Amino acid sequence: MGILARIFARSRRSQLTIGILGAPNAGKTTLANRISSECGNGTPLGEVSPVPHETREVVALEHCTVSDQNGSLDLTVVDTPGIATSVDYREFLNHGLTKQESINRAKEATRGVIKAIQSLDKLDAAIVVVDAARAPFDQINWTVLGNLEARKIPLIVAANKTDLPDADPTLVQETFQSEIIPISAKEGTGMNELYGSILTVANM
Image (tube, rainbow, N blue to C red; front, top):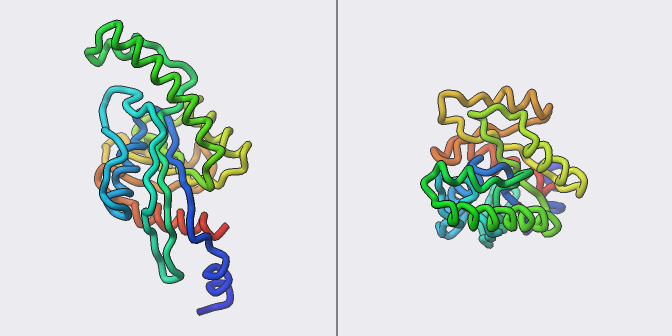
């Protein structure tokens, strides 16, 4: 083992709390469930739905294990509600909800956004999930990144949904001008690279 490897092996955190953040329907809960199935106890952190703001509570799963040649990392994975600059109850009407159901959903989603922002103070690191099949020039993405950078929380940008034909991870990388990890949380591609990035964060 080289000198740098020995230093990393000594300095690595043994435990890391990592949050999964991003816009609604970017694939955050799909990713959280994938990590649980591959590294945890297999318990889903939440349901996946095409209806925006399906996740409206902060949910944590402890003791997900990620390993490499230098040892193991005990992860606590935190799935958070989608962050939005505004929530319009009318968007839920298009998904078959009644007006009253839509209003209630919008209220819960708004509270969920607040909970997601509050959860940042308990994180050691974060994965920002960006829908690579949509144009990334979204104020929400910048809001998430800005909040993390203001708190000096190490982050990983995951360009998700690379299984879709319109996905363009390169555009995500060019937009944020930082290294990104192309993944498909649904199919499981790119997960080894993502775990490698998490281990790198643990060495920081």
